[in-house]
Amino acid sequence: MVARSAQALLVIALSYTLVFFTLFVLPGNPIENKLTNPQNPLPESAAGPLIAYYHLDKAPIEQFLISVQRLFQGDWGYSLTNGKPVTDLIGQGLSNSAPLALLALLFTAVLSLGIALLAVFGPRRLRGFARLLPLVFLSTPSFLVGFLLLLVFSFQLGWISSIRDEGFVTLILPAATLAIGVNAPITQVLITGLDRAAGEPFVTVLRARGVSEAGIVGGHLLKNGSIPAVTLLALTVGDMLASTVVVETVFSRTGIGFITQQAVRDQDTPVILAVVVLVSTTFVIINLVADLIYPFLDPRISYATRRSRIRAARRTRAKTPEVFA
Image (cartoon, rainbow, N blue to C red; front, side, top):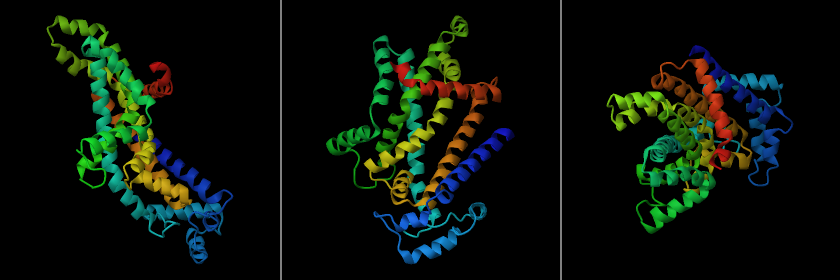
């Protein structure tokens, strides 16, 4: 686990280094880009202080070392668009996006598990329908799912307001949109895993011992069949973070996705750098948590086995459309 944590820190450090040199050091001064940006130009009076603050007149390696020093002090710099501290913007975005992402992860896990159980153990006339659902989810764009949910639950039924902030209730539709958007690969892998586990010889032994079907499924098959899906769920976080841009636009939420869209449009490089580091850190932490979950699902799994399962899950994810077809 120490080695895995060190790898996680290395990934974050490399992400920061690559993005910093791409945004600040490669040809094209970010301050000069803002001065000539027709959409949201930077006043010339602010250019000098910003160049001095970011030390853009110094050697690239010196710029980088100063930025790393400020990073450990909690100083992420200032937005080139509105002059606000980047930490304030990221904090505001996180306060809106973190609850949404957590609820979306919960919806994804519940939806994938429910469809997979129905596809493998449900009534025969419903199994085919359940196996088609991942294909439908994969083929439907996130913005269309969001519009349909708004149309049904907000405009027709009136259960959830599309304008007012009603707390937790307001998160349900965007979280469901995110969950449906990333659900298909996880569900397909879970169905395959449960199918394989249900055909193992130990299932026959358990039935011979008088163990109920519910006990077999809940106590044995889910643990054996869900291991690849847990890995894929962790890997899907990247897709979910990317989808927040569309979802937050549809549902008019000012979260990390909306802030990223604005920063890219306005060439606000300090905000872009902070978002990349935040996303990299989140992705690494969630995959680290998945490492900790594996021994509870199957104590026989070692770290080497975990790495092989990650590679297998990535190959499965890449071939998802072919599996559905």
